[in-house]
Length: 241
Image 1 (cartoon, rainbow, N blue to C red):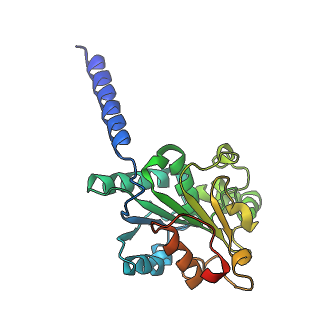
Image 2: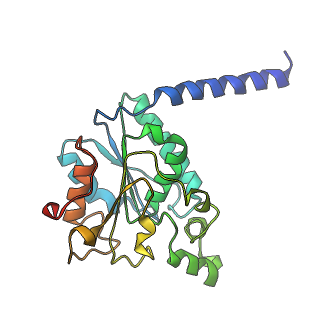
Image 3: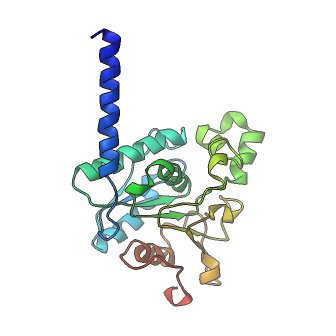
């Protein structure tokens, strides 16, 4: 066999191995596995430490993912890190994983789910600019040199977000956002076709929660804990406030 033939054979074999893995790593949605939390723009793991601790207190293993660089680089590179983390969880014996994405971390989860969604039992996102945010659009327009790659990709109508705009999610998904969000503008950019959409104030009128408070607010935390349980994924009611 020629050198080129050998390289092709190895490549095809690797594809076969990957397909075999992808077929086996399907979430058992009747079983609770680890919870993986994805930070937002800037990759601040501390922003999700309170929520991760609360999940651990409920009896679930939880880990906040470290994003490459400072979390402002290419979202597709962040997707690759998430993919590896999920693969590692399954290789270590997990029967399912739940994902929680905060802010841009939810967009990373959305991009990942487009190809690997069958590996997630449930996905919960908090204040995620699924359709972009005008803050990033303005930054990209007014100060492009100060708008890193992820900033450009989070602009309304970006080449990364546009292909997903009209696609409903196929994974059990809850998207929570606050109408007082001044980072994700408009706040209902977090709305997803096919998801359980939860505008916080429509369930709990009068509650005041900023974008940065979403991962630590006690009401939001209670919604998340319920959403990653074995109960049906439904819109919370005022009694849950």
